[in-house]
Length: 168
Image (cartoon, rainbow, N blue to C red):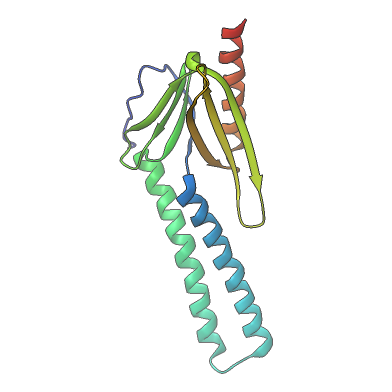
């Protein structure tokens, strides 16, 4: 059972997604680089047919499985324990840390804008959200994988509703 995180009275939870940050981006790039490198090695083994090609191919496949197994295990553990999550609530946004506690939280009423930045490349794809405070300083920044399209659309929709309603 997932551990409950106490956000500062932000109301009902709409959706949550994992936050990756800079180490997560580097892990994603490294994981994809290893996959491309191993595919090139396997093609080389098939084309050149060296001695013990089967053993070498098994070693290469074991490396790929180990890297992707670690990624799957981390995602499962993070989701189960509620760590490194960005949670959208009715009245604000909260981000948890590596221990599952609240690392940062901001209420919709304190925000002036939410800026979304998309980055897509061969080895990485992510979305960065910057929460700008009414006083002008950067309140909080969140980086999520681009596969969380529903989370991104909900975040922008809630921001438009809550921030737009305050300005009217």
